[in-house]
Image (cartoon, rainbow, N blue to C red; front, side):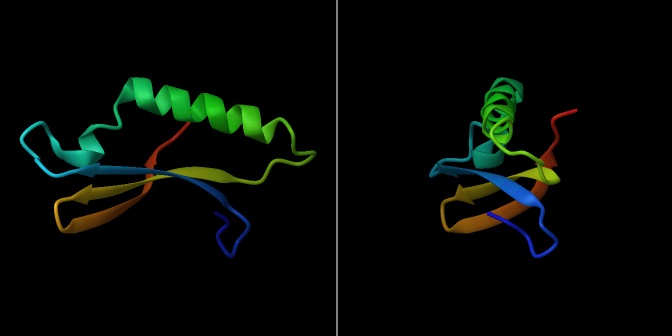
Length: 75
């Protein structure tokens, strides 16, 4: 998805019914982040001029929805 300012947003959506193991957002740990960054880098290589990017997480815990903007970065 693109923001109005041109930022390309990579969004990981995670859902959990039971939050005892830390919830949906906690399931996007370092290993998952590394895989998402790798996929984003692969995608961006196809673009002549890569735009600014960010990584968001949409976490669904039961009925609760949290959109964590800039949840992590590639650096």
